[in-house]
Length: 193
Image (cartoon, rainbow, N blue to C red; front, side, top):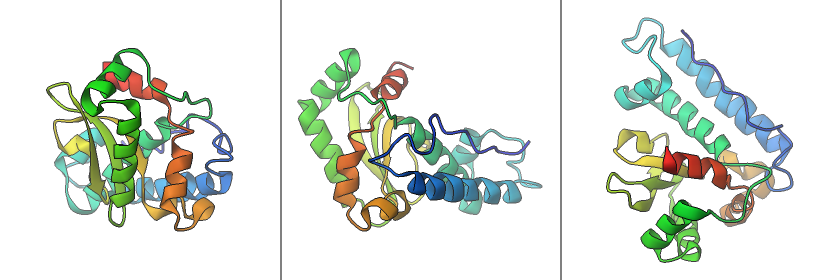
């Protein structure tokens, strides 16, 4: 069994003008595909051969982990984005955000600050903790909330390849654009899942 590159949930130009088709061609078509190709070369003969992606992320290390986690993180990230994104979460998710962060505005600021302050390559996450409260976290490189008891709800990829074509080194401009694309429907499904 080999790991497949999941199809994008939209056309490669669907996120314009916030994320260009050229960025998706490289980020999805080359980077994400590259992790799939590398993982499929590493799996044969390993103890993880035949396992599903989440199991590999949770139980492997080294090159297997790095490539598997990057595949999972990126697949999750693509689903967090939508061309038809809503501007704010609703209902129970909105209430949980208010309870955990005092307001949507404060949540958005904390998430943005976390993404901006993530040193080097990594990810900003909104997670649901085992006690039901929400938190904003950051992981470096390929690390993922899958390695914890937290349930990932939303992520923003802050590796430079996510934004360098469109925004050069202006991570803050990329984050401003990110908020126009957040797929709150997907986040809501995860929250209730």
